[in-house]
Image (cartoon, rainbow, N blue to C red; front, side, top):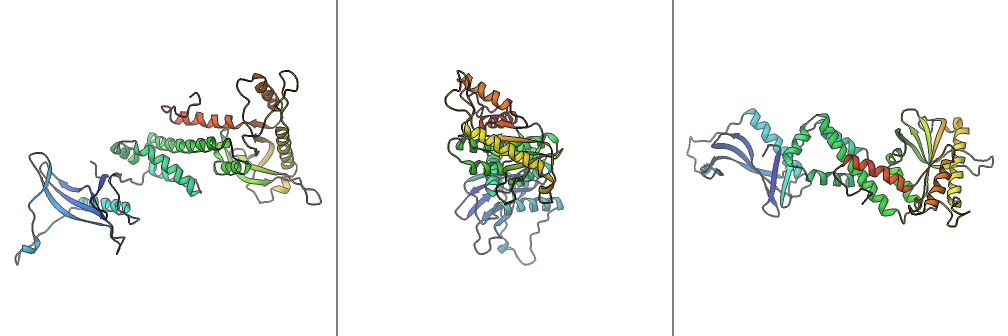
Length: 379
């Protein structure tokens, strides 16, 4: 076992024995410090005790404590001196730091636990940054739980090598694990609410997970604001247009106006307009008109709207995106054809269904976890 990998085992409700810290070792003899994590209600910071021991290998290759010296039986003029080299002191200090961290909340670890002391390397910094991108504590906890589940499946010594490494491959491995955790969380949340959630829920979800909208386009987007006023008020101060989201291309600053409806929003009328032809639903037509008016207001009133309230963005032929509804059944080719022909005829506006958004995220997940087919849409 490496010095950065250690174990703890419960010995009572108040104590847990940690694996010995090997300070000096030869083939048959070694010097160790045997630490114990303790619950100390009087002084919670003082949560580790222990003892030094010289040990010898038995005939069965097990380490056994050498003969104990009883300090109380020392005579006048007798003493015991234990010298530690600087490297040994550093080893002891680092392991004790890890043990104090294990007991930092005043609790004693329960059962048998494996621990890996993680140095501050580029890989670890990447992990911290990935977790720090979420301001919502609940999201961070869910991501961390998923990521720790992945960590738990790794061999501790191999994991330590990855954590200590500064190589690009290790960084990619950790970034991929965090990315997969985020994608899985998003997919689970969407699929759990496809049948029931209203517009406020979806607006909140895409506020928290704005990266998902970027998957629709082949360029990077950053959010400018949500529930954004984009102009259109009359002289009586009535009316006005509000977009669910205003995003911009990170590279060109061109704006993207986004409207979110619900998965249950109908896309087509139930009855055909003519044989094999279906007209778009009133809800879809209204959402398209609403979004086009918001886009038009943003272009016409750009100079008034960008008086320093928002980060700078451009309205050079801005995109408009409507996320709405669910695709007609694959068994109804007439409905799918009618829907495709309708949205293909729209100018300056993209209509994307929730299934299509989810499928793009699913493809990304399968790229990050090529051996895991549990999220494959074919199943």
